Image 1 (spheres, rainbow, N blue to C red):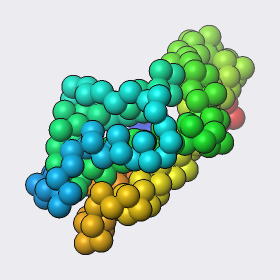
Image 2 (spheres, helix red, strand yellow):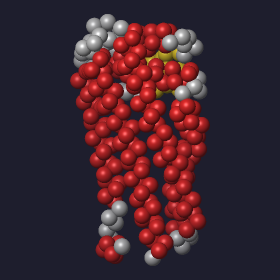
Image 3 (cartoon, rainbow, N blue to C red):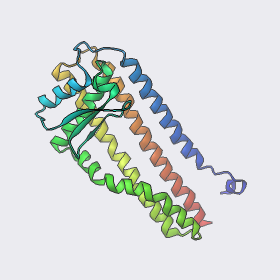
Length: 233
């Protein structure tokens, strides 16, 4: 590519697009959560209480709900069956906090019911993490050894595992949000006019996963274009 001779790499635009998408998604979820975290739910339940009711009504009694530090650091850990709610969610009465707590409870239900995409994500998580950590060292070593095509190709393959993990995460997250909304309605934790507000919070949160997946795909495309061109050169 002629632009390389002037020190300009046009594939940086792919990285820039991914960065912009991630920043926009992050800003969206923060602003949406902030807006609806100020609206107390009519039920008066906290995030922790809502998660407990959902799990109980779903016949799940072996999941521990605990508070963890941070803001929107909520997650379900299938390894020890813990539903971890952040400071902003655990004791909060807002429709936003209840929605986030219900979403994490949705992951616990996925685990209990043997939801296939979640099982697949859990299976490839260690390999994907290893691939993400080793991919760039392999590529750099390949470049140091005279542009070794084998090492560069192996690095790209390892990075592809991390991309696959991001893509598999999408249906897992969307399904958890769908379960959350349905359960909040069925259990009566949120009233009809509150559900649309919670949906907005969960949809905004889902955008962060979409942005992360898109960013990873764009980075992978950049690697293929960048090193593919150099090997031909």
